[in-house]
Length: 143
Image: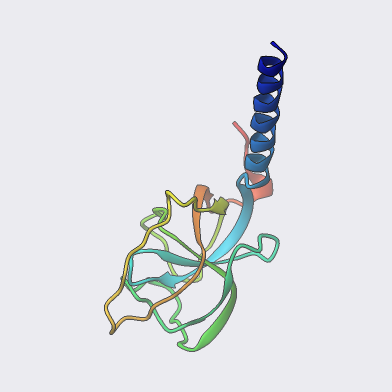
């Protein structure tokens, strides 16, 4: 009986520890600037420095569909850049500021696409975006 009680207590503690880990990676409202597209169908977004999920990369131009908006300057280095396969609004343009909740993609959510050799290739951490808005985080009305 003691073994069963000890087993149940251990399972309960492990469940609570796992729940704490999941809370640590909960989405947070951040802002980001849309930089461009990748050849594998993602968007490149430069995150605010308050959410250090990304990495520095040199932008060489859109690898996928060319986004409307200000002309990109090939060879520009950007810090804290991520890529997302989350669908963005169809009216999205380069340089547009968006506000969203972001979290790293889980192993199951990672997309492993490959590009042809004649397209710019970008290596940036993949994130999942939710609650995408053009309204600042502080101005959102919680439901």
